[in-house]
Image (cartoon, rainbow, N blue to C red; front, side, top):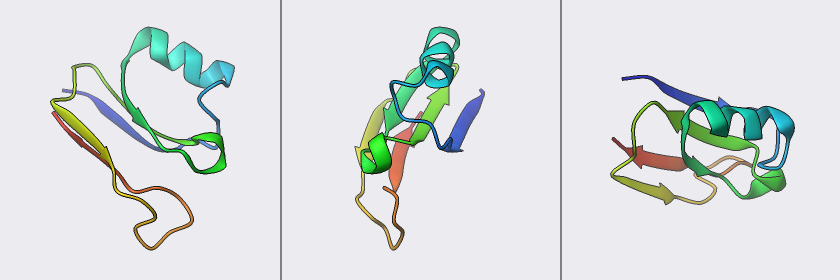
Length: 65
C-alpha cells in the first residue's frame, strides 16, 4: 500500500494536485488556505474525516484504509 500525505502548499485546483488525482486515489483534502493539505493513496479509503485545526493553522485530516 502506498499513502502520500502532507502539506503540499498547493490548493485543490492547482495543476500539481489535479495531476496527482489522475495518477492516485484522492482520499481527502483540507479546507484551510484553499485546501493545501492532502491525502492520496493507491487504494480507496474506507473513511475520511476533517478533524479541524488540531492545534495547528492547518486542518488535521484522518483517513482509514
